[in-house]
Image (cartoon, rainbow, N blue to C red; front, side, top):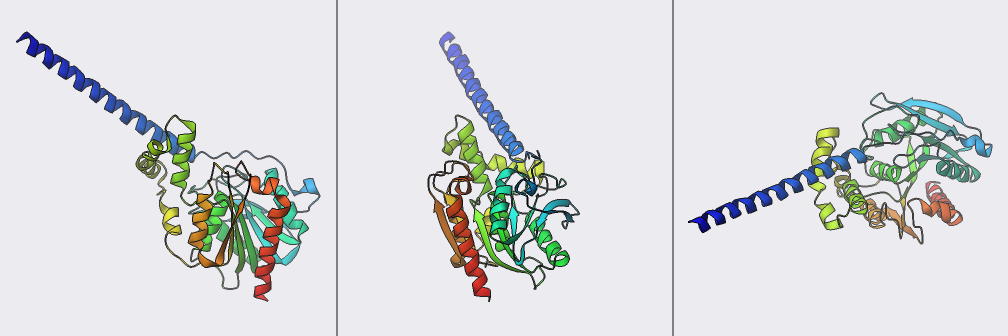
Length: 316
């Protein structure tokens, strides 16, 4: 009898250990899901203070309103108004970063008029709902409408990087309420992400001991807490890319062979989603996100210029 009692106590203790471990795993799971969701929506709104004047380029500061009455801040640089390019910055960034001003300078030297602005929640723009590019399409559409009305421009190209590239690509697959006079003659998407949820779980595996398989198991938790905390369905963007929608204009998609922030599989899948009118170009030996322009500037701008010239020629 004493032996049976000891076995019973031992079994109860074993069950308690199992229960404790399961509870610990659950707590860690919830913590990582909430932490990842909060970090994903954390925006850096630091402004560098730089502007196109560092290259002696004159610009006009412009404020315009999106459909949610959020005031957005932009810069207008006028050159040839027959070819105007809109620049869309990346996540946790803004138009005043030197990277984008350097790019603005390159387009300026190619005789493009340029409009660059800060998305909602970024730079000098007001706060608004952040959605990884899904609702930010409205910011882009509002910019196009403003320029069409106040600058009398109806022919645009769009360049975007990462978050901006995803926004531009979603726009290219969307039925927007643009004036029929507004034409988009080309979209350049530099390393867009196909699925923000996948990017987030990849980040977890890079910053914690979890391998990609186990970090992938966090997806349901991240989806749940993003919906609860921020009223955002993280699957929306992937749904659009999987929708087989028809694109508005031809696209040129860039990827980087060694990019670990947005691996090349993302821009490759975005390119496939954009269909036959899209072309994919991969840059080699760019170790960091955004290196394609920094370390391959001449090739980068030549590819863009040739692509846009070709599209403009087709319109004539």
